[in-house]
Image (cartoon, rainbow, N blue to C red; front, side, top):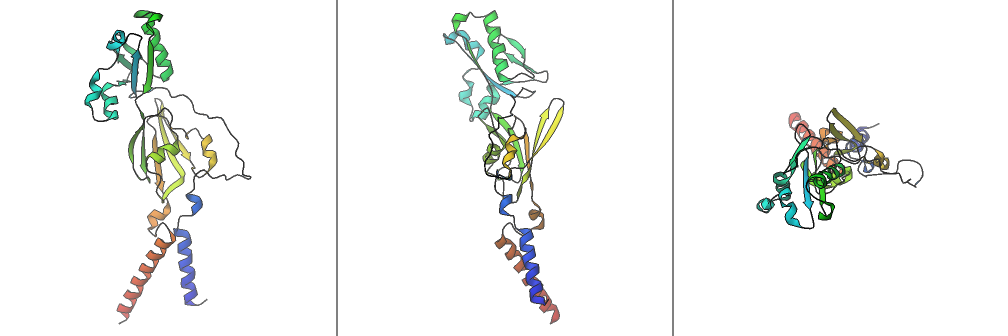
Amino acid sequence: MNKPKIYLFFLFSILLTSCVPTKDLVYLQNKSEGTSTAVTPSNQKPYRLQTNDLLNISIKAIDPKLVEIFNPSGAQNMVATPDQGNYFNGYAVDDHGNIRLPILGEINVLGFTTEEVRIKIEKLLLEKYFKNEAGVFVIVKLSGFRYTINGEVTNTGTKTLFQDKVNIMEAIANAGDITIIGDRKDVKVIRTFPQGSETFSLDLTDAKVVNSPGFYLQPNDYVYVKPLKQKSWGTGKTGIESLTTIVTILSLATTTFLLLRN
């Protein structure tokens, strides 16, 4: 095999190994045989409150003046963003798993769902302060769905979405999507519990990922997208970028060889 053919083979090999294949960029591919996808029920479990969670609690009645003392004042009008309003007016779960409400005092909510907390507060109000005719109505929600995302995404950091449920695809989309050199086949979701933490590895290119217990996030989850090997090689993300890099290297090598030869 002559030298030109060897060079061409070398260039072609580098191009094949340095470019990111299309199949590594497409989400939710049906990798099993056939084209039909069975509908499976969601395995998402209700979120149970942990320490440092922030709750938004609103208490209403037929006569609003009866429940004014239970609700935050108009301080939310003084803050610049919804996040700041939630921080100043929300109820934080302390290290003992309690929240502290006006009049009602401390209520333990650790390990409860928001629906269970709602029922608990409503029951206390009706037992101690109101009759059924007062029309007491309690709303309990998390003060935004917070998660942290890092690695090969467009916008890293701690994000807050104002919705009850968030899956990994929504979380990544909210962070500006995974970059072209992010590994979509091994996205880590780290979930913290009072007794420790658990890590899920998600292959977002496989449609079966929706069945993973890590597909639906829980508040305060940490998401990490590691880079592909192409980033450390520095050869480029596409064929054109890789070819440009290779041509530059060869040109530099040729120039150096000719200078030394002369």
